[in-house]
Structure formats: structure tokens, C-alpha cells
Length: 336
Ligand code: AHG
Image 1 (cartoon, protein in one colour):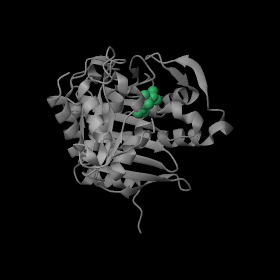
Image 2 (tube, helix red, strand yellow):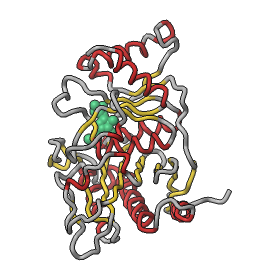
Image 3 (cartoon, helix red, strand yellow):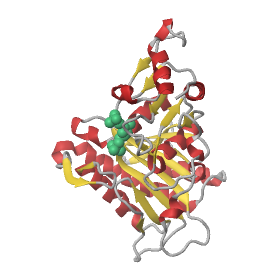
Image 4 (cartoon, rainbow, N blue to C red):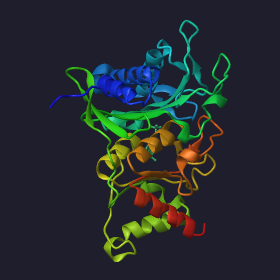
């Protein structure tokens, strides 16, 4: 079988009228940076990259050495290409401008450099999530934070990379979600699934059950009915999976269906949720919708939220369309 590399795929998409040379080069640079992150993660203890960095990020979370290294790899890789005006990251309070030594471009890049990094020390899959926006017209020299605050539906591309048993890139530029697997010997991402579609029927859900006591009534009722199985109102048994790496949980759902949820609860009400809108929820929502699924806060489409802060958090329900709609129905129908 003839293999299609990421470069060839993006070139053919451009010829079909999807994307452009600048966007393609930007995506290739991001993919190349992710290969480097994958190599560093893969070395594990041998590379001296496990453990704490001894610092905290803007969200007050302890940074792992690999959080810091992955952030640096993405920033360095994206500085020189001429396609970006600035980058925003989970690990930095404010956007980082492209250095003056390099030309600036018309795109903005947002990323969670190492999602699920608390899993790295125990050798469980981690990943990178990214989102690409266009800079608003007539912007000044430096890209202001306000330029990043665009609704998710404005994204021009989004992707994630899972560093697991194999390294997998899932990418959308708004014409389907496509899966690439890294050929580690050759060093190229090879298209392994064009236009992936999330199965609509599902009997699998992903949630951190240890938060149950803090959930709102609609979530209590929704999960209660899932757990009631065949004898309950849903009339069938459901299985539960929780990797605690969003990339790994979402990739499972892309592959075999299911619903991923990180709802609002009393312990995180003040901060608005657990997952970050701009570089976790929005890019995942774009990929999932392009794969025929749905992504909601439980009360509305994630990609319709008008952001008001770079590190804003939101409740997240995403995956098989019918199941996400069912979770939304519980939120509409249950008083809280
Ligand atoms: P981070 O980017 O800080 O590593 O956060 C990980 C996220 C997400 O990947 C995962 O779904 C969730 O946090 C896990 O949360 P719990 O620790 O509550 O299970």
C-alpha cells in the first residue's frame, strides 16, 4: 500500500482548496516539534526528564520537567517560520511574541504542550493539544491577548498528538479529522485513517468518579442512570474508562465511541471547570465535531463560547453525538 505522508496529505488538501502554504508549513513545524517531544518522552528515566521541575505554572499547578521542556520545544520550533504572530500556552501567563529577529505571520498558535503530564512518571500516555487561529485584520505589531479570545468555531486548524504505544497525530483543518501514525524509523507521520468518524452508538463513558459527591444534580442523575445498567432507564450496561490524560481518553472515543466528561462541580465552581477552553476544550471540540461527534458544556456548544480569558476553564462533554445530546437533555430536564 502506498503511504501518504503528512506533507503529501497537506499539499493535496491545499490543491483541493483546503488550507494554504503558510498554514501547511505551520502545521508541519508543530508536527516536527511533537516528534521531538515524543522522543524526549520516550527516553523516560534514561533522558532525565521525569519528575517535578520545581516550579508552578500560571494556574498554580506544579510543573513536570517534561511540561517545561515540551513548552520550550514548541516555542523554539515555531519562532522562525514566519507564519505566526504569537503563541499562547498552558504553561505561560501571557502570549509569547515571535522574536524580532524573525518575520511575523498571520496566525496565532495555542497549545497544551504536555497534556496529562501527571501520568508521565508512571509511563501512561500523555499528549500535546494545539489550536490555530487567524490574527484579526489590522492588528498591531505585537499580538495582544484579546486577539486570541476568539470562539472555537473560528479555529482554522486543531490537532492532538498521543505519545503512547505508538505516536499518533489527529488533525483537522475543517474538512474531516484525519489520523496519522509516526513511522519511527523513517521519522514521518503517515496517514492511517482518513476522515475518521466517531461511532454514534456507545456503551462507554469516561469521568473521574472520585468527584461524584461534588457534582450538580443533572450529572448525578445522568451518571446514576448509566450505572443502573440494563435494569435502569437506559436499558443497557455501560462500561467506564478514565486514563486521566484527555488526549488518551479522547483518542479512545474517536476510535471506538463513547462520551468524555469533566463537568463543573462544587469543588471547582469558582474557576468555571477543570479543562481549559482555548487549548484543551476548543481544539478537541473541533476534532470531535469534524469526526461527526458533538462537544458541549452540558448546556451549549463549546465552540460557540465567546472567551473572556486566555486560561478560562469550562465544563466538557464530548464524543458520540447521541450520548452528548443525552447528557445535555439531563441538564435541561433536571433542576439544579
Ligand atoms: P494537565 O494538562 O494539567 O496535565 O491536566 C490533565 C487534564 C486532562 O488531561 C485529564 O482529562 C484531566 O486533567 C484529569 O483530571 P483528574 O486529575 O481530575 O483525573
